[in-house]
Length: 168
Image (tube, rainbow, N blue to C red):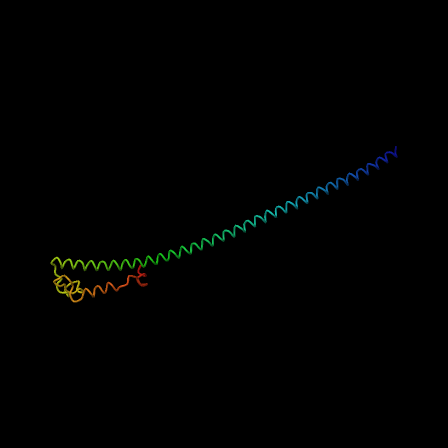
């Protein structure tokens, strides 16, 4: 019996050591699988992070492009605005000049109408319209005053000068 128990204890010692080796191999295999799985998970995580970074860089590039287009558009619009503003100033100066000329012409018409209706200009020095001279019997101005007056109106420029634009 002693020998059979000795044999039996010897064989159970072999089974225990085989079982421990199997267990160790199983644990090593699980460890390797976990390590491979962790490496794969880390690789996927790095790829996601890289894709996200690439997407952000593409978005930055797109936003910079849009920003440059907006700045260019804004510069063009500002230049058009300045051109329109300068043209508006010139037109205002021309309008003021033409308004002044119209008022002067209306004053001349009023004088001519007053003369035709029996009014009298009297002496040119006494008249507020002394530059016109006298009006003859036929209703026309005497002493070439009309020629002088028309010369002034026909030879004045309609364009405003730079000094005129500063007033507006």
